Image 1 (cartoon, rainbow, N blue to C red):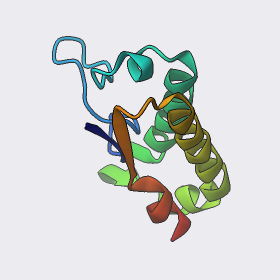
Image 2: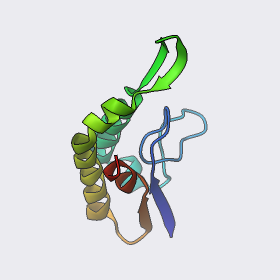
Image 3: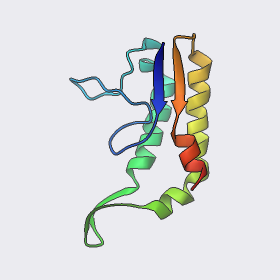
Length: 108
């Protein structure tokens, strides 16, 4: 059984594992990789998270906007819930989900 981890990092969507040639998020589980709902939610989550990184501003090469992340907490939690719900909906028992983001965001 494969484990799907939900975790955010710079330039990585909430569901990790990328195609080595394209860099496109891909788990190797077609029902996840080809699901347009999961892809859409993942994209929205990643876009929001990526927006917290700022480059060459405030005399810093790169910094993370923790204040904005806290402001967006409810919205991010709602999107993570949508993602988890969709993964649970399509899960045929071939994978488990480890969500590391929802507990982290709740603590903000």
